[in-house]
Image (tube, rainbow, N blue to C red):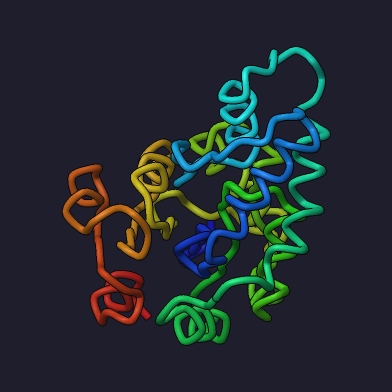
Length: 227
């Protein structure tokens, strides 16, 4: 069993903000795959996997779930994401570059992704911001529809890559939603929640986060990680 700590990062509104690129891409994909031109602003995407969101959109558009169009919807979504990503004001969130660099340079830590993005979407976003190479493995929406199932997959991939097992109680899931907190609790990991999305610090603590901060620039985040 490794003595190293394992950090598992959420992506959207934790590492980066794409300024609505995902939402715009989902709306465009709904039109091409489902034939429905509709605003999806009423759907809460926060903390959901892309595959789960696809099903929500399918239902919202009144499209039968067994019609085989979900795969096309997700493929169209990725295509449109490549077009939408440069638009608006996408940015790396405060504290991310410094913290991920510190972790990467330390022999006491390993870090990867635990995200609701499809793997191709995660790579697209993080390459755009120059962050992709900081994460050597991940668990993605391709692996499980429910975020709560991704933790053990991430642990297994970390073990294969680093040739040692990581204990869940020395694993920290970093995310911005109550779903990230629930995901951590589901496999016995610690939860560092950052109120950089729609959830407040109090809401994240009420959901069971072990630590919640307003920004990853907060000294409390570094103290909790132990770096």
